[in-house]
Length: 49
Image (cartoon, rainbow, N blue to C red; front, side, top):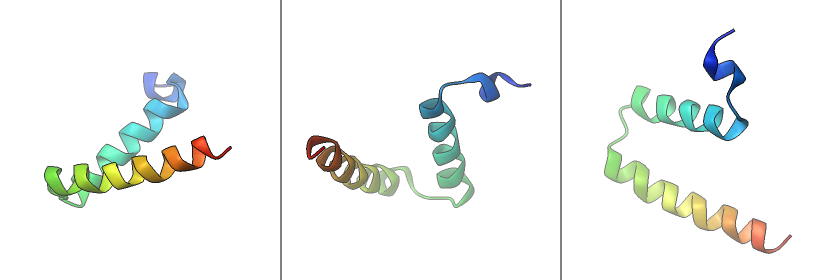
């Protein structure tokens, strides 16, 4: 069992997202802009619950 298998879910998700972005050669500035939108959307959902 690897250390990643034992990591918290948010770490596993972060690693998956980094892999997805890098394997698709997404420019870091584009990824950051997209992640800002995702963060706003998710924060809105958290705030409304």
